[in-house]
Length: 274
Image 1 (cartoon, rainbow, N blue to C red):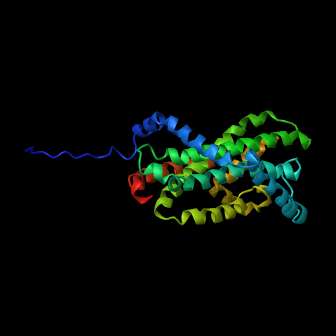
Image 2 (cartoon, rainbow, N blue to C red):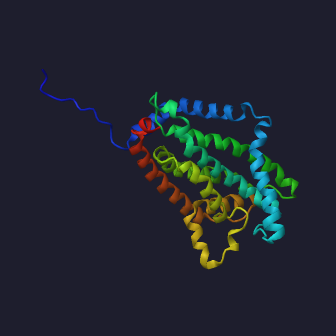
Image 3 (cartoon, one colour):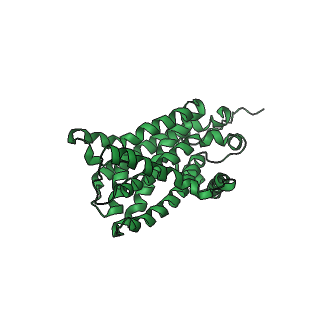
């Protein structure tokens, strides 16, 4: 009989193997994302038009309520509908990606409980699905620019940076919310309410300059405020607030790094809890 004991332990909480695993399972990532995209539009009568419904509805409602009734004016030399359309497109990317990624682990419970793969691929695939909806709405936004009599600007080449920032912010937060949602299913009910409140704390339908000077520091606590402002600035050829954008991306990085640590620590319990 052997006089020694073999103990099998996982490797360190975070290592280069994590990135190697994600790369090794990259085909599964695209499989998960393409499956969700097909399911989303397979039996939808209007297909991809549903990706345009939410931002267009928000443009109509916010223009009527906040522009016509409340008298809010854009701080960019563009019409208010185009101003708000640019904000809702980038905001919808963040909100949809966060909502879908937060529920992704629960919705993929059958796969998680049967097969091993890096679980982080599940919320990441959900963000990719939301990015497809964003691309559809973004094409319409670019078509709308000349229709409203506005020119294209060279600064529009910077728009992918802010789109990646919004998607990255959603993914960073979802590392926390998706893992917490496994243990406390209240997340899926609380998150829509939180997003409804957060849109009012983000300059989507109003310019940041509308806030009093003494209160604008609060925007630094919301990375999406700088991302929305940066996206608009690049869209309409205005100066990009790189200081605020840099601070926002730094905050997103911190949230994402700590979220990944928490996600990895909870990952070993996912199969038992789902």
